[in-house]
Length: 114
Image (cartoon, rainbow, N blue to C red):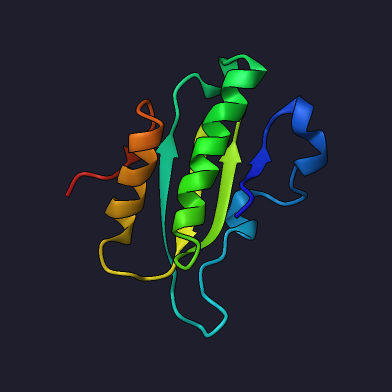
């Protein structure tokens, strides 16, 4: 799976034409409602290009391991935000972010208080 990156001048060719809320799918091809989560990766945009590319490669490797569940992934470098839409698999919205955090320890799952 190739991670789509936005919000960076050096990646201008990858910039989306539409905002994330219009691009991120809410339903699968068969109409099943998708789940999603957001992670913040503090100071990612400020890292040197090589270090940033290494982080992106680690995220892509994790997403590849979960390719059967991941429907959409977008990394906004301007906001340091990773958005992932997944099929409704029990526990995936904790398991996948945990796998990302193991590879990118500074990544933080955004959640609401219940």
